Every structure is written in structure tokens, then in C-alpha cells.
Image 1 (cartoon, rainbow, N blue to C red):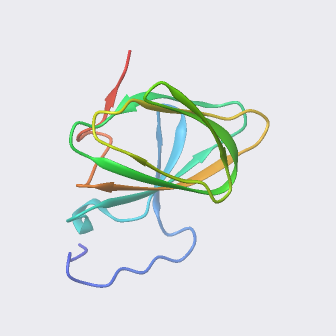
Image 2 (image 1 turned 90 degrees about the horizontal axis):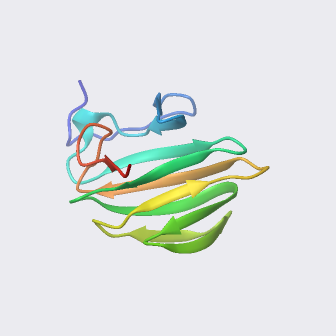
Length: 123
């Protein structure tokens, strides 16, 4: 068990990985260590779509680590490339897609968001 008031250091490959609606997610902070925020690495393969979703309470910050893709944020289109940074406030529907390149994004939430807590997919 990870204590919330302890330093947590992960080596590459140490994060817990899971697939959410076809997208690989690396959970950088174990759930029990998430007090003020959660942290993920979102990895999309070429020609993938992360379906539209939103969070009622969680505010999100994204940083594009590598690759290229597209984002639709609150109905507006954005080109994603390495170095892009953006904020998604609570209640804003967001979706991502890739074409012929992979996309890797660092994703932080405050308060913490999990696939079974404060994550709502638009049908």
C-alpha cells in the first residue's frame, strides 16, 4: 500500500497499465496515492479514436509528450503535436483521434478521476 504523504518514484515501465475503450492508459499514481490529483499517460496508436467523454468534477491538464493527433474540445477542433498543452474544465466534452502517427499525452486531473469515478462517456 502506498501512503499519500510518501515520495513515489516510478521507473519506466513501472506504471499500472489498462485499456479503456480501446485506448492504452498508464496510471502513473496508484489510486491509493491520489489525494489532490490523478496522473496518467494516454497512449494512442495510429487511426484510433478516444470516444467523447467528460467529468463532472475533475479538471484536466494535458501535455502532448510525442506524436500527433486531433482534439475536439467543447465542439472546437485543435491540432495536437509534441509540446502542446491544454486545460479541459469540468463538464467539457472532449475526444481525441490519430491518423497515421501515434500520440502520447500526459494527463493530470484534480480532483482525482478514475475510469469508474467521475468519467462519463457520451453516447
